[in-house]
Amino acid sequence: MNIQQIKETCLYIHDLDRTESFYQGVLDLPVIGKKPDRHIFFRAGRSVLLCFLPQATRQETELPPHYAEGPAHLAFEVTSEEYQQWKTKIEAAGVAILHEQIWRDKYASFYFHDPDGHLLEIVEEGMWG
Image (cartoon, rainbow, N blue to C red; front, side):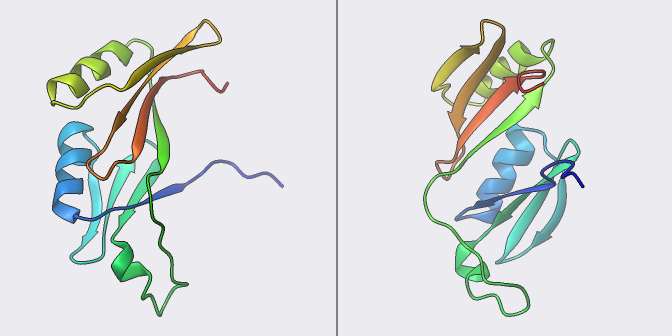
């Protein structure tokens, strides 16, 4: 038995519309589900990014209650050919690049924040094999 991939990643956010503007408007992630006063979900390649309002999900009765506080980190993989285009796009949207890193003398990545302070990263494909 093997786990094939992480299917969903979850962030806890404070404003659904602001989150939609950022992830759909800046990162071009399609919205695949939205429930007012609870969540918005995005398609990220073969994965799904779940964004929940923690004040709603900590009161959950049908599913186990879930919530978190503080900034999280996640990375989006892009092709090496598109890496610089993504960096330019993020900067053009007025989002500050916090740091750029070259890993193992081969793969580049850069870090930036979303509107809720989560630390996001764009990384070239192949970094983890």
